[in-house]
Image 1 (cartoon, one colour):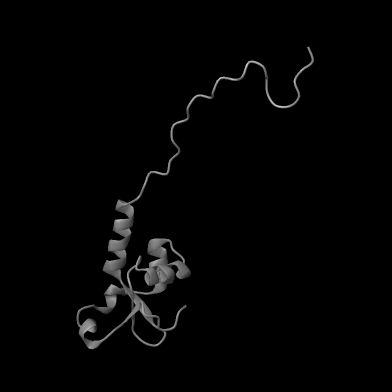
Image 2 (cartoon, one colour):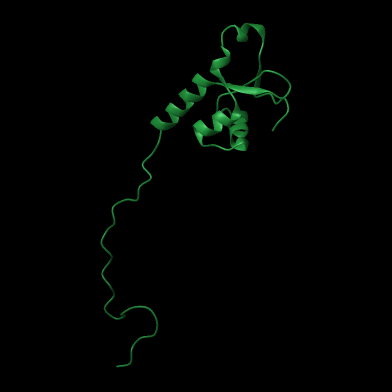
Length: 106
């Protein structure tokens, strides 16, 4: 894990009065909610694609539950249909060749 990257918000007195301890979740909960890996969470945070963590101490980082939930809802709303398109009938076979391999003797 990165140690003090610029994509972690330092928790100050003004923030602690706005966010309760129940609203902050550890990385394990973030991973369970999102299905992402730790490295992906930190990479996407650095790219601005995931909510920033809140550094509570030198090695303690938590995420705001509402921000992670909102990110998940946005991801669900933006999903695409990955199902295969309906199968089309196979093209007509060539009249001169019957399949793979060598042509048959006449």
